[in-house]
Length: 82
Image (tube, rainbow, N blue to C red; front, side):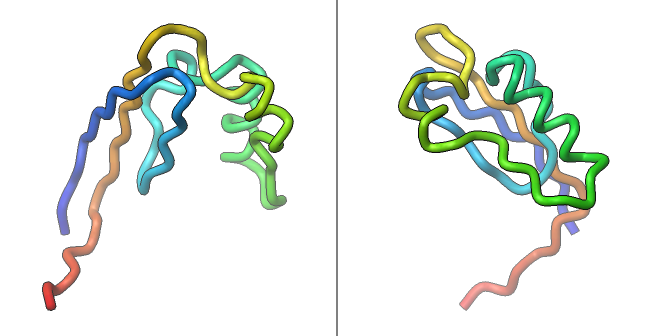
């Protein structure tokens, strides 16, 4: 098992999905989306974080030139290589 801490910096209109836990949602997401993400952690229901309209209208990611997404994942299985 491995642990990972990953930082990825991209233009602000890109979204990063990864295994593990997003460490800085308030820095990379609009407040409404960050709130939905937080609520999803304690819900058994499927939570839609963003609609296609949200994406088109720039309502998902925080504003700025570039955003750094920080992810952390613990106890990830090691997959065998081919």
